[in-house]
Length: 341
Image (cartoon, rainbow, N blue to C red; front, side, top):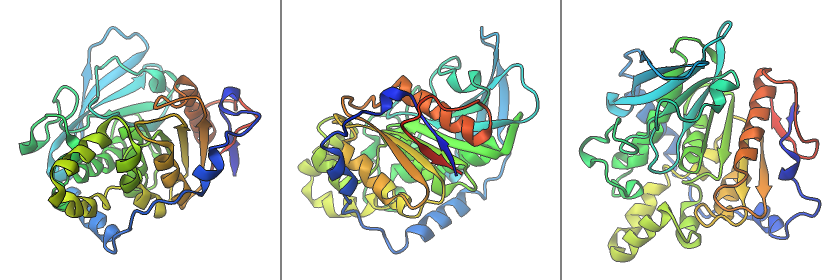
């Protein structure tokens, strides 16, 4: 095992008094008996649409990074968009990071978020269906807010079944894109993107690592009572108005709760968490961390909220990827370790 570390400000001399209880916390979420079969069948259906991804070069003012407009088949064969960013000066095939974004964001602009390509990676950022500027619509559901409440009556119709399938297909697609080493692919994200990444680490084949900052979609029964702001409130408000939907909705949510993906995990994971987070409360993050079945670790930020470690988390992710793929010289902090194979 190789140890990977982050910036020294990620560790504190005296542990926060909240942390022992968080590390002991367990979600009440139930794992459906057919969870693995549900997702196996979902992915098998999606992979019937096997058209190769397209990658069209985009003109930008960037002098050191090439950007390609990517389209690949997602859930139901729906065209899903993304940006592939590559360092212009590259030698051979590059390790890839597949990036999932926060609630409502979508893939953004072609010149956004240059960190990963600047660090030497092939960077595919997936457009979350129905979110952002609408480049990837969500079929008949339209593109309004309230994604977490779409299709709650049945797991087969639920919004995040489509999104998580898209995420697995994004990993399939990146392996077929120019300049990418198909054997070296990591997934990452923050908030909604972190929840998607944790699911993709289970759903996609042979992912090298998951990097999850303040993951959303974790411990959904707990989140409904613990979260004061953000998307979980959309769900809580709906169930408060329409009490008859609660039992069916909670049964549906079991199939996308990343606590259940964590219980079956095979991919090493690095988590981070702000202990003052009232959007994805720390109990919900630790619920996924504490159940995670593969190698894992967590960086705790006692004084931060939903931003967790912010740029320092990003530095930590670069350290993890550098050790994992042999692309950087070494760690920046001898006090926090993050295991990777």
